[in-house]
Image (cartoon, rainbow, N blue to C red; front, side, top):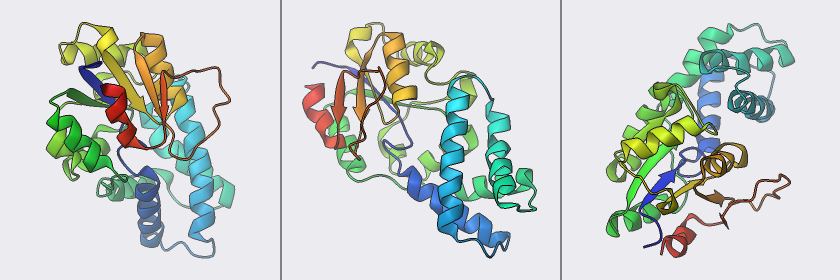
Length: 230
């Protein structure tokens, strides 16, 4: 077998994060009785802000604690909403812990990886209270026992430290037998390239790669991993 350890990103690769995000926003704004602004507009603006602020995190420009509420502060300032961003963040995260929606074919690929008895781990940037809750409530917990979360170890993708930690935890010494699979070029792919392991960009929407980052593989369907592994 070409690889004996697969590092899997969580959100956007195994989890349907867009669905989870919309679910959590809808319920949080409903709880705060926000009216007059369509949820489609709020969710669109939030997504743009959130994507940018996670890029700030990847570049070490903001820490996870500040990230939790800063994204809502920016959203509320944009729409002139008088809401406590700290309290709202806690409400949003409460609903997010419940949102363990997985993407199409996630169960199929996890069953396959289990069948061929290959080592695997989830390696994710995120808040431990959210990620562990969602994983434990989803089918992921049936197939993956090793979970590496950036907040718990103090370093996130694309930094080398999280990869060094992951390989040590998995007792994996040969980098040539390791591959990371993820949907983010600037987090998963850049991190893998910098660390010197093979990378697989999960690109279900056929986005154009306008960066200078060249993944080892690019797939549109997560089941394409079967061919890559063997």
